[in-house]
Length: 153
Image (tube, rainbow, N blue to C red; front, side, top):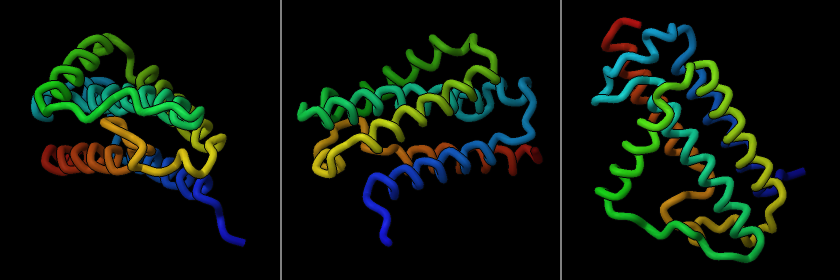
């Protein structure tokens, strides 16, 4: 029996989440809070992923109800400004909460996708916020992994 698109997307989300978790596994709060990766910390990268998954949950839910994507493609400067602001607003959070928030946000996306009609799972219906964000997660996990290798962590 073949898995439907919802199951495949949920599996991809789970795999991306596992990859991010492995990328940060064993790091201390202090290591995760160092502003060492192009002005961001590991924790900032996780906050950033969380914010985009929170937005993704709303986009998937909106499109599943027959609506249009609320977030049209943005200019790079707009994305950079948004990312800087949202990361700065959550920088005070403890790593444990950041990790819990990320897992919860990703689970909301998975639930939203599970309840979607198949026609809402067309990536072309999404704007700035992609359907799953899996590649986004992979990219940040790779960035963290590369930083760890460079630092010998």
